[in-house]
Image 1 (spheres, rainbow, N blue to C red):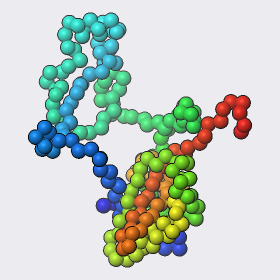
Image 2: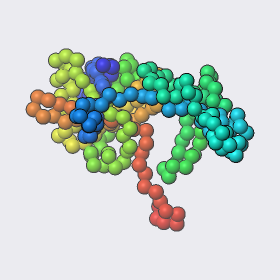
Image 3: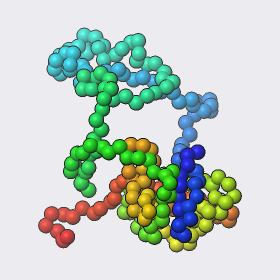
Image 4: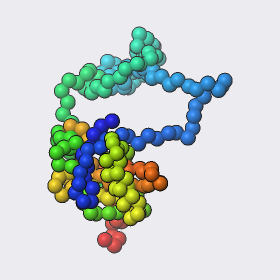
Length: 236
């Protein structure tokens, strides 16, 4: 369980744990005899159209090669069951790229590309000396889900009796206000939240619920705000 340093509305902070909120599918796949399936990952292909074009020159050449044989299939590799995987970047000719420059693509609300810029290597700050802080800005639940796209959610967990009381009171306060609280990094909580070194910066919202002695405190992360499109010539 990873650690996160967080402060409450009274600026009192504690280091607690956080985990990905599990999502269970409502559909369960079974075999004809009722036994549960054992999913496996199989290597589908080792070639793509770009590498085939580099070998055969053009689409008619690739098409003729497919008729004459199976150049897209490596019979020694295709169909293998993969036990371990590692993400690699490939160059246009299909070779492994050992030096990669990552770019950040900024898009307009309608999805069109606005600009490209070098991806900054942000420093992780969830377990930094300065805790993630409440800003005092609350969003009603109904407004929050219609204003932001929450791409990640993490459940905060207590590590002892003291942090249980700490998180329970936060969840209770949020439930009573029926709102999500905006939290962030820095002294005023206005900075972005970065989970891992070089990771994507997010804005964070805390949601809390209690049921008797039980509580649930979830950190929702977003890097996309929903904005209504304005038709050209329409009211601004």
